[in-house]
Image (tube, rainbow, N blue to C red; front, side, top):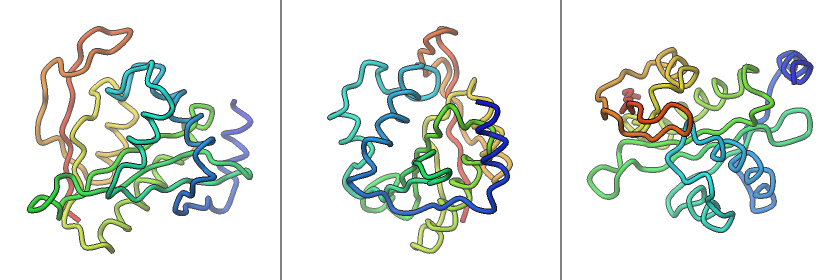
Length: 173
C-alpha cells in the first residue's frame, strides 16, 4: 500500500474523465470497499451491485473517474442538490480506492468537481451528509473552502463508533 502512494504521488498528473459503462466494474470495486466499512456513507454495507449502479449513475448525475497507474483509482459524481428551484446548487459524492488514500486523489477530484460545477453554471456546492468522524474528508472540504452550516446530531450509525454526528457542508462557487 505505501509503495502505491509514493509512486502515485510522483505522477505529474492524474487523468480525470467522464465515466463510461465499461468503468463500472472498477467503480463497483471501489464503491463496495468503501461502503462495506460502514464508516463514511449511509448506504447499507450489504447494498447489492445493481442498486449501487442505480445510485451512482442516478438520473441527472455526471459521473467521473480518476485514472492513475493505468487503472481507476477514484470516482465521483456531480448533480443538482435538489430539482427545479434548487438545481443551481450542486451536490457531489466522492470515493477513492482505499489503497490510494493519502495520495491526493480526493483533493484532485474535489478541485475538478468544483471547477466543473462552476463551469456548468452552478452557484454553490453542498454536501448533505458528511460523517463527522470522517476527519480526512472534513479537513479536505474545509481546505477547499467549504464550511459546516449544520449538524445533524447522531445522524449516522457508524459500524464501530455507534451514533455520530453528520455535517452539512457548503461552499459558494
